Length: 325
Length: 77
Image (cartoon, rainbow over all chains, first blue to last red; front, side, top):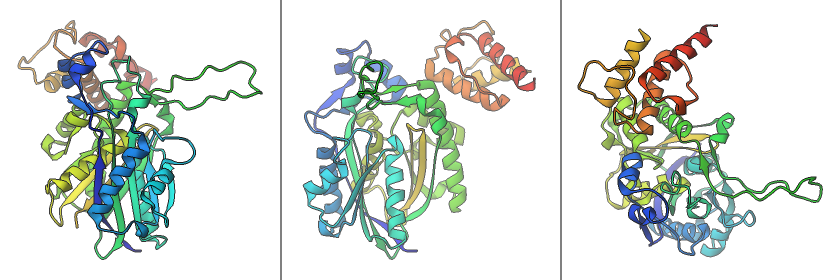
């Protein structure tokens, strides 16, 4: 089996900052309420940029970071719950934009675990020798599926994109992976698509609102349990101690989840890298945006280990221990 | 036993200075928000190996104790 290296990272967020005060003019809420319950102070919201636009910019950033030729890319996996269209895939649109003519391209739908699942998929293709170089993207325009009148959800989400380049290499950069799903609890976090409304339908089914709805309590419980489970399982499985993990990057959902998990694990919350205070929850993009920030700020050196953990709608979850080249 | 364990969980989670709290105390009086309640429910679920579905009806410590006793009893049946 081939070794897989992460040779480049990239990200992009829209320039428009929407802070909690601005939201308080739209729905009945305030900065103190939002910060105390989530840790979020502001988020980026797209003005006219769709998922493929942001994904393209993140991809270009990652390609530049990896110092590869775009023609080297043989696989583009794009994780999103907010594609531009059902067809063509957002991955294919990115391919067109960056002219990655040698790539096989497809989207995956795994909500906030999408980036982890995407890296897992690409790593398997490289390990087996099917491809040598892959581009994995997590990208979301959550603002287009947010109910801006629901004060429980509209405070949470932001827009953005992130990307990594994976390549067959001499060193092992993907130390371990663990993933899972629990479809039985899928109702806890939903963004509906298109109902069956065709010429055979006896009654006219009205179009869904097409916005995200969430059972906050169930998702909080799930997130906490999964984070604790994966941190324990993956650290033991890899034979490392928590001391050897430089950062844990959780999906950037809510700071209260992270605080509680740190308490349950008996570790300093600073072990968890967060930037949700300025970007909010960007679903499939969130882990990659944080990962790119860590690399760009030179917060890690060769040999450092990072544990990334995604969890979200599906319900889905997954973790990967990455070793920095 | 159940009452004492639940009180301890609440005192630990909220880092309360007092050693005892009245069971009629509401969670609102303790300055808790909904996420604090979720955290306490998670700890209670793990302590007693039960699942508590309906957090909306749990407003006081007594409510939590009663729901817990009820779930334990249902499990034993």
